[in-house]
Length: 141
Image (cartoon, rainbow, N blue to C red; front, side, top):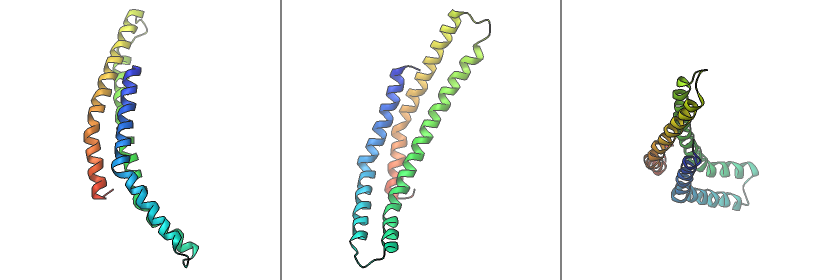
């Protein structure tokens, strides 16, 4: 697969993650830390009580991060399956008697297939982003 296609995928994922961080995760982190600070400010509480309080503060953010990570892993898994499919298509055409010219042609076919699949997956990211944002907004993750 071309380096340009790999870079487009990496940039698209980076944009996805940074956008979610700015729109949702960062605010949740702030709320979590403010909540934890309030737990630590309670000088009358036992250490177990403070730890339980901090755990409750962290729970929503950790669930949200786990959800975002899961969506990202699903996207990357889908992309990997697409690339493997391209590989399989080309391997099926190879034979022990394939000439150097045929091998070069098959490599080119693989690259074209992989680039197209990368671009199709990148095109899915806006819908995935909307779904993730809607889910984070609803707090049902």
